[in-house]
Length: 457
Ligand SMILES: Cc1cc2nc3c(=O)[nH]c(=O)nc-3n(C[C@H](O)[C@H](O)[C@H](O)COP(=O)(O)OP(=O)(O)OC[C@H]3O[C@@H](n4cnc5c(N)ncnc54)[C@H](O)[C@@H]3O)c2cc1C
Image 1 (cartoon, rainbow, N blue to C red):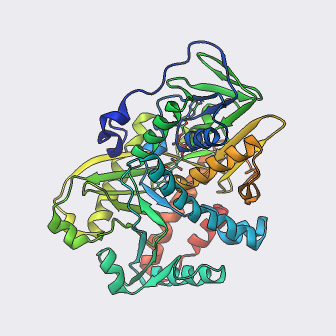
Image 2 (tube, rainbow, N blue to C red):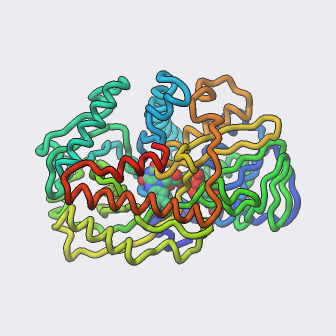
């Protein structure tokens, strides 16, 4: 389980010891959960909280935390992949606002659990600073803040920063201004997912690792090593969903790549900033994200890796020389003081994207099948909301969460290949093309508007 990410390689021993066994026979239980990432494990955690007597089996193809949950950028943000106007079009203005407010509350909930359980995953609630480094980016950030105001989000949620204030948070080159939101914490993602796995297994959930499920059907999960019978089955497979029979077109795996420096000396941090371990980005279209880790490294990631034909996922795709080299050039462009420093880790992994870019969760009572996923790159906090919501739906607990607009949303299927490959890669190309065209023309790119239509935004 080493070399999956910086986070895995620096885990303490108590979080790396094996927690499960391999399934070797047919079993039955009350709830079978497929996938031991945040989604599956938070669902188990809250099911145990509502009804400690439930017999829960978690079926995992590799080991708990193997997927995006053990490899991500560690932004526990309140970002939700579906915008307020799109949510409102499908529900109501109030429901859309409740969905985004529920994300902020989920961040508080993770903090509450962290303290109650005494988990240590390097939590630092420093907020997020986004820098505008071109006039077009500055206009885009101003628009974003103005739009937030029309939806009732005020300075306490998102505020504009002057160039000076932005640099005070993060001293990148070419800063013209920025935004700040307090609704984000930097975390060590693998520590969170392993703490969750440890906790749910200690409370009695059975974890079956190295046990790939081949299909999910009402009342049964089929694996190569035996069947798991349960009246409730939860799909929590995110970017890997295509491994289940009949589900190749539900969720597309899109890669995000990361790198991390060695621990940097204090004089370098004096120049970069991020004193409160704020997460940071800039306002380009092709997403980048970074954090100052608890042990003083800069962990930095971005999109740009291609979508692979047939939704292929292989270990060699976790590293992409071209994208990692581009990420390093971007990082040195942001912080020239890093030139000559060392990249200690480079990794990546697949996140999950539904055709209409919606995250969703739900429980179909007649079939007993529940699901959650499609978080795009915003799953760290959203999975907590998903886990709580699924636990309430499955146990029939009265809950406000059940009426949030993402609950029960069904995304349409992705196109068959080769259309899926063409469409997904076109959207990725448009994002980088839009940045280049804005740099050249100084105007908001029409490609960006088209891309937003393609991605359902
Ligand atoms: C590089 C990267 C950076 C990211 N950065 C951020 C960030 O900073 N902030 C943020 O909010 N989000 C981020 N994300 C997204 C976030 O990590 C995910 O949305 C979140 O971890 C999803 O959790 P999950 O449990 O649904 O999926 P996963 O963690 O991917 O877990 C799915 C699990 O299911 C298992 N599985 C799949 N198929 C089967 C099967 N057939 N049988 C048995 N088991 C199966 C897999 O092995 C895996 O362990 C990032 C993602 C990546 C890849």
